[in-house]
Amino acid sequence: MTCEHPDAKAPAPVAWRSRGPRQRSWRTLRVRTSAALTGAVVLAVLLVPPLVQLDQQAVDLAAKLRPPSWAHPFGTDDVGRDLLLRCVHGLRVSLFIGVAAALVAAVVGTAVGALAGALGGWVDRVAMRVVDALASVPHLLLGVFVVALFRPGVWPVLLSIAATHWLSTARIVRAEVLSLRGRPFVDAAVSGGASRWRIAVRHLVPAVLPQAGLAAVLSVPHAMWHESALSFLGLGLPAHMASLGNLVEGARGSLLAGQWWPTLFPGLFLIVPTLAVAGLAGAWRDRIDPRRRSELML
Amino acid sequence: MRDAPAPTAQDRGTAPAPTVLELRGITAGYERHRPVVRDASLTLSAGEAVGLLGPSGCGKSTLARVAALLHRPSAGHLLLDGTPVTRWRHRAPRAQRTAFGVVLQQPRLAADPRLTLTDLIAEPLRATGRRAEVPARLAELTPLVGLTPDLLTRRPHEVSDGQLQRACLARALVLRPRILVCDEMTAMLDASTTAALVTAVEAYRAETGAALLAVGHDAVLLDRWCDRVLPWKAIAGAA
Image 1 (cartoon, rainbow over the protein chains, first blue to last red):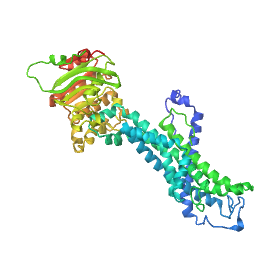
Image 2 (spheres, each protein chain N blue to C red; image 1 turned 180 degrees about the vertical axis):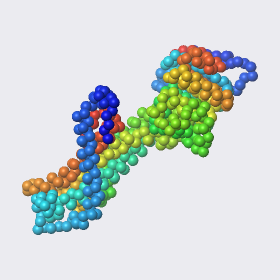
Image 3 (cartoon, each protein chain N blue to C red; image 1 turned 30 degrees about the horizontal axis):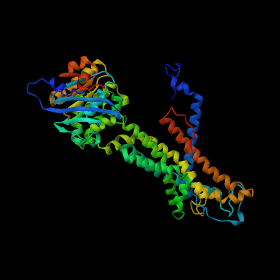
């Protein structure tokens, strides 16, 4: 594949030199590691539960709180359930809630931001004051309030996360739309007879989709942490349902007794996928806006 | 302060063509109490080519935007075919907005970077629900403005400024406007592209009898191109 280019010895263009090969290889490594980890996590949560016919709820009191061994690589919890299986099932629930909530939040945020930016005037003022008001309340508190309105379950948690995470997307999208709205190509579209709706759908929203998509991906880890926090507080999913927050919460007592594995492994299952997704989002952001320094943003 | 009727005095007098566009005492700007254009008046008869000559930053582009219903003036009247216009931009009825074909100074900013040149030119037809006319109009317009078929599948960043401005001119002509507003259309282009674009505009006008408001700072070009050239001082009040 490698053929000798005639000007192979020519100095590299300045734009590349300023980055430096070391930084680039670190970046590539980060992207590849993040992609591999995210892929592994997605495959595990999609394939393990249907393929591995083991009951994650199977209680074995004779084998409770066993440390990691070949039979139970992550050990067992206080009623003898296999922690590896519980972690995979918990990750499945947390990841589903994270992705679904981020999607809902992105759609709502994009719609509100685009409407506010495109229509302007009182619609913009009202929408942005609502965003300011909601953003002024700590969103975990707001999330707890939403969850408290319903019975425990997946949907209230999803609603609580989606309802508190669309604000930043709405702000980003509105700012982008406002800057695009004054561009001459919008003037040309107005003069060409386009309606407001047509301009929004054809010119404005496609232009902000990369930013909105990035905001959505960045909010996946955030939403997973939010779900875990709600479950840890006992306000999220029902206690019997494996979610990473529930697993950590259930293991608190044994941690004090010196059994570290029921806390450590669910914790790692929370940290590693969120870092992997954030790493991918960071790479995406670099592609959209190379000027900005990429840093992990959680 | 106000010398509004001045331009009409310059009319040729013989067999007066109907006035298609009349601006009376237009004051417009972007910040309240700081107008860019003060008390400007201008008339455009059917089929007439009027050049508006002024130095950079004098407000002629703003006046062109007001004339094309793209910017709401803070004072003054605009009459289109004798009918007062009361709404601007999206609020203006579509028939009024599309009576104008607008070509702007910078084609890079005037083109949505996501659309291919075909989509760019066809967009006004699609936006006004005349999708069926797209192939026929493209076949008519692309030779007129001098675009070759291989350029039509490219996006704005893949063509030169001159080629993109040709596409922008085609887009302005696609709905068969009655009034063309060319705001410094050729300011960024070389002489041969300038000549080609002006020729295309004149060919369109010869065919349809459209009026032209050409805004620019190139006195030689406007003199050659237009029936009459108005210096900015003659139409606008003192700042």
